Length: 195
Image (cartoon, rainbow, N blue to C red; front, side, top):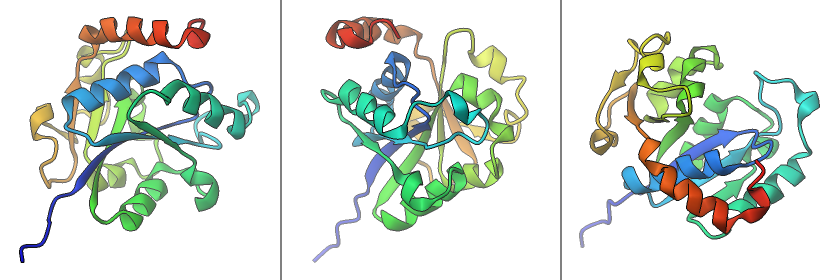
């Protein structure tokens, strides 16, 4: 009998989701469309180490809002960091990789986060643990990324090649064509239209 060597592919979008909004949803749906994913996980952090905590809504509220926004989509909302008692992405990735050994993960982020990626705790280790997919954001595209400190250190590949078993690879996905989906999202989630 031949063993089943197939791996589940999960995109991971971490953040404070304070609150979850159509930008998070647009990135996630774009990732599902372009990266051959089985699902996307939203990992809601109790506290972003790079942000001021006094502006945060309670995590229970942020989780509830995220679950409402993603209810009709292939997106799961998780609170890994509270149990892990660490808010560092490198610790979270280490944990999920060791508890889901038959899963391949890819870290999802907006281009605005890639600009400050070098400020993340042990960012170079993160890049050796998982591939990274970077999505264009309003006012932050490829021209901005070319000036960020990580640009020449990480190796860029096309989206179809992102699942190569190589460290420090990333891909760029232009989400500007995804505006029609954003309209559909707004129509479907009228309570979030003001976000």
